[in-house]
Length: 226
Image (cartoon, rainbow, N blue to C red; front, side):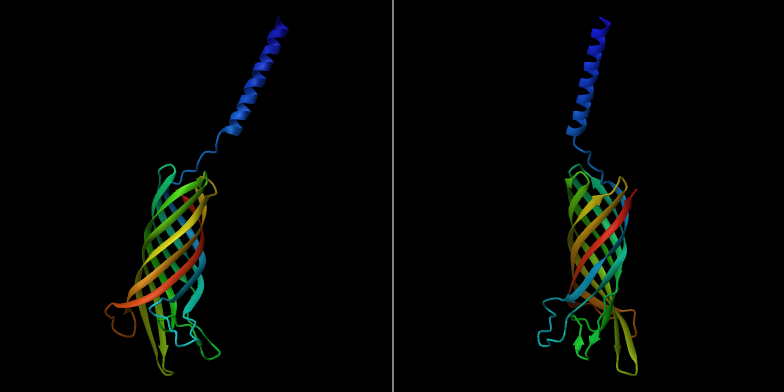
């Protein structure tokens, strides 16, 4: 009798163990929580170029674009609704992009003259969908304000002036949760600047005027949630 009970208990334990193992395999992985405040470091590729209204089609030597390294920081707050994530975000970035001459004729003016790219401020919102438990695909959009630093020279004196440009930004990206509170992102965004003013320079500040400048960026970032 004791042997029968022992055999029965062993069978029950084996069945429970098998069921537990099956449950561990069959149970889907828990989705990461994308809620809460976040901060991130950003780096990527930045190119500004003349928009369609500012193209210089008469000069084949004018590249009409400048490119360089983008770097900065971002903050945001997300609300995880289950399969959908809503968020607000802001950024402060800078760039090494500037106009250059080569062979005495190749001038990368892109419609704004001889400039180097200054700081860029962005504020906007995003909406995302969980395509995997730890992977978020999202689109974004908002307002951007950028500065381009102008430098002109006649050989004897120099003129320094800032161009303060307003525009909008749209983009899309992927965010991968490395852990409960760390993440990495890759993102493409497009910005267009349509109004600007001269300020903070050797000449008096100007009234606002129309421009047409496009900006393309591919960036990666790493960050933390709190």
